[in-house]
Image (tube, rainbow, N blue to C red; front, side, top):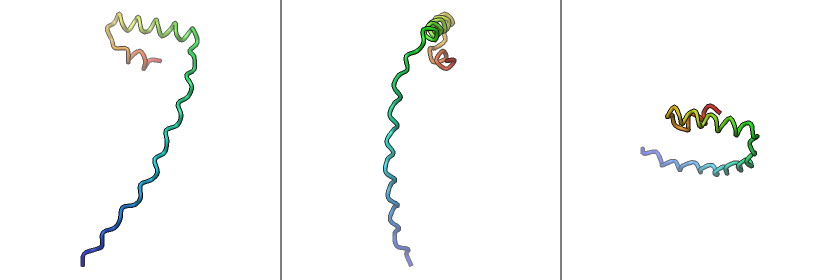
Length: 55
């Protein structure tokens, strides 16, 4: 005999995303290093994503 159709399990309620952490202001030293790395990557012609991965 044909098995009766099993109803789907109810979906789990969607978990809300965690609220974003407030942006921490970067120290001047990090900003300076980022500017230096960005300038170096621009001279080398590599994309900016590589610089962000280094950080």
